[in-house]
Image 1 (tube, rainbow, N blue to C red):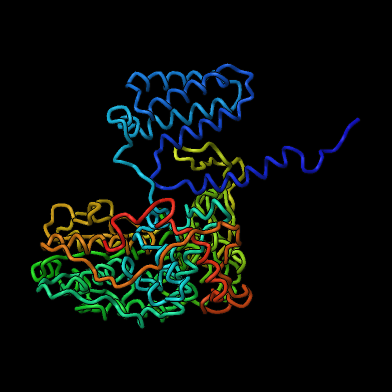
Image 2 (spheres, rainbow, N blue to C red; image 1 turned 45 degrees about the vertical axis):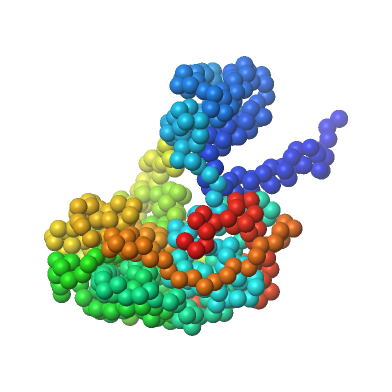
Amino acid sequence: MRKLNKKGNMNDRIDVVLRKFRSRMTSYPPGMCPLTLYRSLLQISMNQSCGKCVPCRDGLAEVDYLLKSVLAGDATEDTLSVIESKCRMIAETADCAVGVVGANLILDSLSEFSDEYESHIKYRRCFENVSQTIPCVSLCPAHVDVPGYIAMIKEGDYTGAVKVIRKRNPFPTACAMVCEHPCERKCRRTLVDAPINIRGLKKYAVDAAAADTVATPEVNVKTGKKIAIVGGGPTGLTAAYYLSLMGHEVEVYEEHEKLGGMLRYGIPEYRLPKERLDQDIKAILNAGDIKVHYKTKIGRDISFEDIRQSHDAVYIGIGAQIGNRMPMENADAVNVVPAADFLQEVANGRARDLTGKKVALIGGGNVAMDAARTAVRLHAGSIHVFTRKRDDYTALQDEIEGAMQEGVRFRTLLSFLNIETDKETNEVRAVWLQPEIIAEYDQNGMMTTEHSSNYPYRFKCDLLILGVGQRSDVADLEKEGIPVERGRIIADETCTVSGMDGVFSGGDCVTGPSTAINAIAAGQVAAYNIDEYLGYHHKVADDTVIPPAFPNPCVATGRAEIEERDPFERMNDFEFVELPMTHEEAIREAGRCLRCDHYGCGVMEGGRGE
């Protein structure tokens, strides 16, 4: 007699457990020993083994025993050779994927973390004293005291929360609007339910206490030193802020009419209202002795050598504001525009009339999504986004979903072939796209594609936007002796420019296009290293007192999300799309914090005063 599966059978119950287990994998804490991680993953493969074949059943257990000896400091170099040979044997002879994948996992670890294996064998400890850290603090590029300002919000001290944020990040408002919140990725609250909405709480704090109404720290005694900042974007203004608080005199040289860089000229108004950005900038400029030279371009209005001679140190933070074009015929045709240039046109009041026009967009990053959603607001008839593979959608999921809600259409598995133009007017008429099929994954786990047997696809369009990255305007600086490689200034992780005494650089012009918080982190690092270079060791004053931590009952509670205006309403204007959190939502969300600065991970590294 045949029967249907009984509801609530053993497999169903195990699935419930596995759903909970996935959150444990997501929230593996930063700073843990990678060999411990690999051993735990190997043990999962051991548990999945059916036991029918010897290589998987016995071989994985032997490899686990050898890994245990490595972690205990009892292994030798010969042990690694035995591990490698056993894993290769298992990968070649196991009957199914359980043994093959488990063995390959350890083989990958032998090459990826060879330094970690060496440290355990030679010194009986983790490489560079690996230790667990506070996830949200360590994953924030600027190392903002996240548990500290969340505790302030919970107590209703929003001014104090802004002060705590600004200790490491002078753009609390801008980051509350547009930060990619990497701090949430490994939030330990995931062990219970879902990560804390850290960006949402930061936004609640700056909505309650505007940045330009919160007093900045007391300025140090004047040092008589003078520092030049080339570029008034997030990285340059961050360096200017901290250097001025240290007592140095700062001069900012900005090419545009206003400060803010890509925060002003690259991020649309609906995501970051410029009056809110100005609150951060006003607070920065009022912090200390900062003078701004507007409409001043290095190499055009003043030479870099003149700046260098008249200042004790120079920080170059010019960002990456020039949109890339693709190296193909007709890439400079009429109505073919890089996404960054398209956004800057709108920011400068030169928006195109796209009413009824058919727009094609190549690329899937955040800038591409900003361009697509901006085209919606310029009343385009249709916007189609094309990418070669799903991995090319690197934009925040919220941005992609927002674009979909507003009518943007997405097509993937289409590679870009060429641009068709009108021979008389040189205007774009269509793009040709080659259908692709999924192929193997590369060594980084990224999907690859290969051409399909289907014929190339012609897509008619009136405007083609190229969301294929940005580059820095380094030509004039290179002429004046700044070392440049492949369009980027050569500087180390201390932001010191190679071979140039007293010259520092950071942000997108060094790393390539990145996020605002990464640029802010570079400005912070540069400021403290410039201060050290000048012979000082200043600390920025801090009068905040973090509320005490109390045990959290860990009751599973829903995460408070930031709501947005109705898509059919917001797609018709450039008004800010997000709605404010209610007081009840913010307090409840702040109450979900597990205070990892006190429990589990211990106190913050270096203490809050550093």
